[in-house]
Each structure stands twice: as C-alpha cells, then as structure tokens.
Image (cartoon, rainbow, N blue to C red):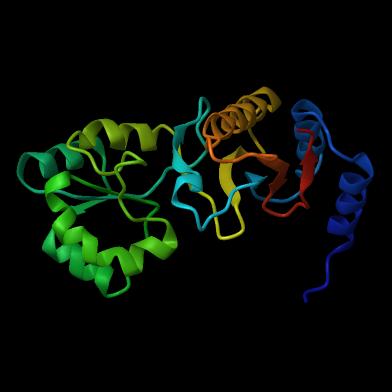
Length: 226
C-alpha cells in the first residue's frame, strides 16, 4: 500500500471530522482541497441498495449535466453512408465499420463513448468482450444505439455522461472539475443524485440510497448527507 502524503492525511482528517455534509458544504470543503498544479476531476459515488444480479435492479443510463464535465469526450461511431457523413460533420473523432471493428477487436479502446446506428449492431455485437468490461458497449438504454447520430454526438460533446452500477451496487460518475464555480458543481451533483433517485426499481423494498460521497482526483472522499 502506498504511503499517503501529509497533505492528503490533513484533508482526510478534515473530511472525516466534518461528517455528512449538505451538498453546498461538501462542495465548499472539496474546493478548499484544490492545491494541486492541475485541474482535478470531481466525481460522485453512490452506494445503492440494489442486487446487481437481478436484471430489474440494474441502474444504468445517461444524463446530460447542465454545466458539462469540463473536458472533451473522445467519440467513435459505427455507421455507413449518410449516417457516417453526419457523424463526421457532428465532430466524431473516428467513424467507420469493418476496419474500426477490427481495430477495436485488436485492443484499441482509446475513446470515451461508442455510438452505433441500429443496422451496425450485427458488426458491433461481437465486440462486447472488449467494450463491455470498459463500459463502452453501445446500448439502446443509454441512447448510444441510434439512427440520429448527430444529436447524440452533440449531447456527449456538451457533457452527457453514462453510468452503470458496479458489482457492489455502486454508481460512479464524473460531475465536473475543481475549477468550476461552486454553484456549477452543486447543480451537477444535485442533478445526478435526483436522476439516480428517479431510477429506483419497484422491486426494492429496503433503503435505496445507502451512501453518497464526492471527491476530487487527489482528495479523500467527503460524505454527503442523504
């Protein structure tokens, strides 16, 4: 286990002694940790009372955050003909079909979002072993299998994010950068929490949201009051 720096340990002590905070106070404390030379990414982590083994309790989807996430996403699109031209015009980083599939099959995954038109899923399907574990597999539920590639590319360029619970029932997402104004981070965090709340499966009888925390790239987690 790597040794934690004095800076990190001091921040950890502040975070732990503060207990669960309202979003406004959690953001204020988090921004006080912005003492690095680079603009840290801000993440939210939610522990949910779901059973990931039950298909009807999988929490998955996408959300366009009001203030974006502070970085440009790299987008690849599986499309042909007019759809391919539309994807290129909309700013996709790479557009293709068979050659793109081979490139990914050989291990290339240097991108953040993969979009496909419905007619291309026969080609994309076999790539599930590569794309699936990385959360990159196009999905109708996430809106990344679509005939309207221009619209979806524009949404992701504007800050749309994807999420899916992990094997422990936790959901993780990027919600901005430490350089964001406090109110921008608050808006994005509250928006994400509200969206996850709205996805509560009907089959869950106990507590749905069990814990929430926010953190930056180099900071400890800060507990958010539920």
